[in-house]
Image (tube, rainbow, N blue to C red):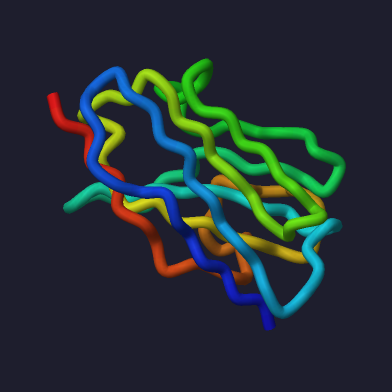
Length: 125
């Protein structure tokens, strides 16, 4: 079993930055696919980014490309999401996810086996 705990969310003004962290326990995740999703009130959970064990990133939402960067530190069993130039529309609960495989269908929530509890990100205008 894998436990995922997100941190780093909070309230930030538009144009600001946040770095989300997701620490994993229960298993070494160096070969796991790791990802980030977000869910705004009244909307479906949407895929933000994923990273494979080889460090190759995949980004989902077009609006975050060039502003968000996913990375991982296998020594710390942690995945990060660096978010720059934040906009009010980035406001959501951000979730990390993991699966013991390569990144195959990251945009599908059913692809992911393990989920964190989420961290709130609020961007004020």
